[in-house]
Image (cartoon, rainbow, N blue to C red; front, side, top):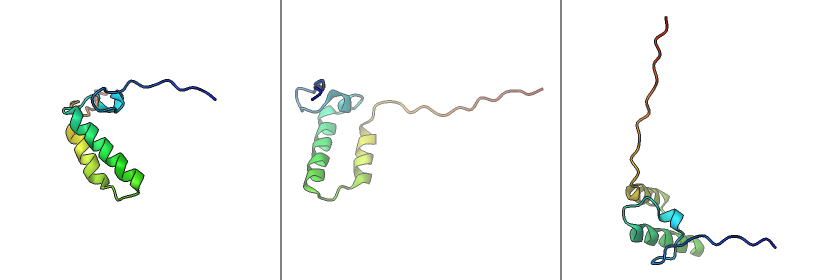
Amino acid sequence: MRKLRKVPKDKKTGIAKKYLSGTKNRSAKAAEIKRTAKLYKEGAFIDVKAVQKSRVAQDVTKKQKKTTKRRNKK
């Protein structure tokens, strides 16, 4: 069987670092991920809109406006 490489994890939370990169509050995002995973494993209802809202609120990256290039036709 093929061996898979271990992913680097956050020491404090145990979540993979790639899921916590670019957040304002790492521990809050890790707690939200763990809470959602627990509900999913139990088969309980997950409020997807609330999860998306919290994850967007945690995002640090600035959203860029779409610019359209206008060319002068002669």
